[in-house]
Length: 499
Figure 1 (tube, rainbow, N blue to C red):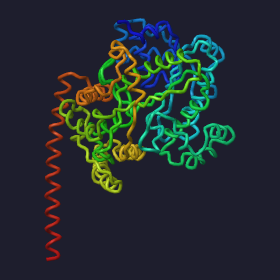
Figure 2: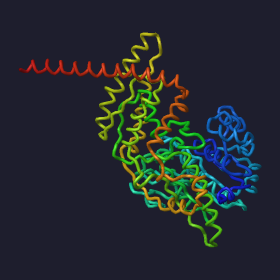
Figure 3: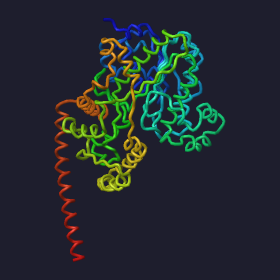
Figure 4: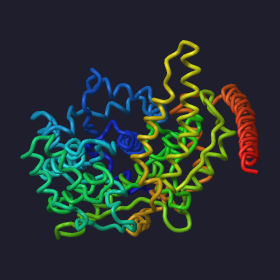
């Protein structure tokens, strides 16, 4: 049986924003490896003195593209970089490149976003919301367009705690057109001062501006064949192109990496809350399948299309909780110990913020101060207190997402998979119900060690890591015993004073 989806993408010209991002690169890799696309126009901004050609050339050394380049050595030749910046008006695209995109693009994948929760409102609005409007306006002028995929987030409506696959404009304090108008009228400083009023119940500028972007799609997409993809927290790949691949420290991975290093020892986490995480390769596959389905559905009707929303979160019997995630971390620490760890990895959790703040004094700040004193004695620059300051700041930003619960409905994703052939279900697999989480965590932590800690997966490196872990375990138990003895002696001394 032939693959309908491979046939759909054959000789297609695709325009992808956020091409250099975590998900964007995985989408590009899958397109080049599994389909016969004609051209990928990748919106990339020059960075650190490198032009876009140099940035794309660097992908040849990335483990993400190893499998692809072994099978198709010239695969990256299909990528044409488009210089641009979603923070700029009209996406910062030149007139020449704009005309090229208008004439040739058949499918748009809008993946670009800033995921910084503490981004100033004007910056987050420009990148996450205004750029979405610009992409839509561009798409409306593309005569060959068959599908437009907007990549949002499952938390774009996090002001409520049960989320279905529909729009929620009623939770926005102000219509998106008015917010964008205010952005044009006011100085950046004055506009940012309005953030508390505009955000209202939204916890940060990221979720708020992503909600506004969805309203842009709802109200301004017109007769475009469009869909919205809402993935949960995107983490390491499950199987393809390589298992466990990850290149960032966002969200839950940042927490687990801190634990593995032995730096993070206490965190405000509700262990009974759902752990809404999804592997990046599943996200890539679903985004590509959603584009195919959107194009096919648009062919079947002459009526103006309604944007289909795909919530991508594990639900039902295969949903997991935060405790499954943290327990998995403890379960594999002996399998993939880090050579660069500074203490035995463990994590205490609480849902009481005051208790977490108190515990950080004893588990983080006091040990950090003692380490800094030791570093000063050795003539080295102190750093641990400063590091803990950054860690605590990041946890404060993530606090809502670590202690609160969200549940989701995913009927559109279920119907999407049912519409696929058996061949395509295997080739573009995004089924979370069939995912073995225990095996996935094993692969994810192996990848965290290899790609984030950059420690080779060799037996020699693992042996050194286990030896270091064993030493820290002994020291950890000795410290616990010492503290217990001190506590008992202190209690006896206090009792003698009053008896």
